[in-house]
Image 1 (cartoon, rainbow, N blue to C red):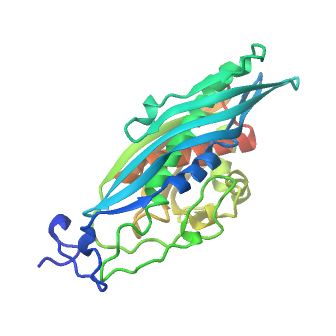
Image 2 (cartoon, rainbow, N blue to C red):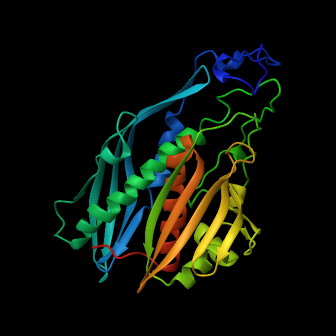
Length: 337
């Protein structure tokens, strides 16, 4: 019999102290419908976008209909979800005039890619035409797509804890309120999630890059990532940031931790970075390169060593809780036309 952590894990017959669901072989299912309904409402409510014409915000989520479930078969998690969503958005012009419209998402489903998701945004029939409707259909739709994409990431991480049973050598971590990591800005968890035990099995990783433009100088943007008070401002949570090479950081109540490995003032930040739910001691390497573009700064973020099944969650997390949060907090938002 192969030892746990050696050989092809598909053929390992594993001893368990409780003799329950050996090697996660039996089919188990968890209903995620109620959790998903609450999560979708919290992610959508408050989504906002603004430009020189005014601002738009999702002010009500009126319909969340559908279902979601997760199945575990032979240690593999299979996700099913299908939702129909309706919401209300309110736009306020620079002169203070308010407009209302509706949002309809008919096909949020595991069968559709996020890029193919239909997001129908309309202005109420009794409202006069306004440029805010165009703003909501462009920038607003993208932010809604990002929020719904983060739901999928949370479903695959938050709600799955405990579905893959520990081994006889592993440490069983009971699920508690602290283990449910809530990263949305209105529901940041008050406690951190204990990292899973290290099984010694290599995990597949991926690399990708992201680009974003900020209406500020490289000097100011560099400070945002290194200044503890500024980090606390855009994350809306306590943070520890040691702004030096080898210095460590701890954000979002310990849900994000890491270490700075290279700092070039106003030009480059390289860090070892991880979600606390990743396999023990596994870090991704993230390089941030700042380029001066006259009145703007272009940021190129390169990600290496991200667990393959965490790519979408990591992308969405950086887009929402770093890039968009920084723009909204410090007024560095790119102009939307």
